[in-house]
Length: 181
Image 1 (cartoon, rainbow, N blue to C red):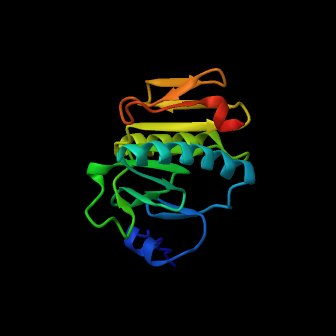
Image 2: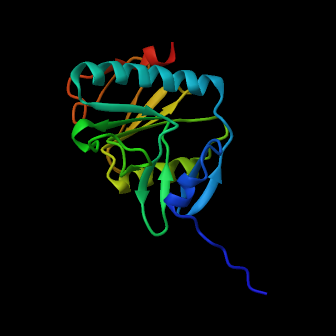
């Protein structure tokens, strides 16, 4: 007897409705447990700072983990970063009812205690390969933010540093200590 594994498309994934935290990675549905309290609080601190800045300057939109981004096809991959920013000129008129078609300009991933390095690196690679300008990996234990502009251009920001994103958010700055206070 042959076992045929069927991969899921992004449209099939979207049609499932609210199935809880999950991702579609190369056509495979990956279920995840909800994030811990500190994880959500840190993501909210970042999202709030970004949203206030982006809204005031009318630069685009900031989303949280509920928003999916369709980043590769055949097999399909849909990921949802903890926080994302999309430039205004990339947002379709009338918004986007389904998954956003493409990567955000900025993807923020807050590490959870059970995250494995290989899984985190796979997310970073997916975002960068899809065309994400920056990926921020936030480490609540180390209180650092690692900014990836490519697999070779990486910068680590500590509590003494101020985070900036001049190439996508001119004028934005956020003291790293404020994210963790």
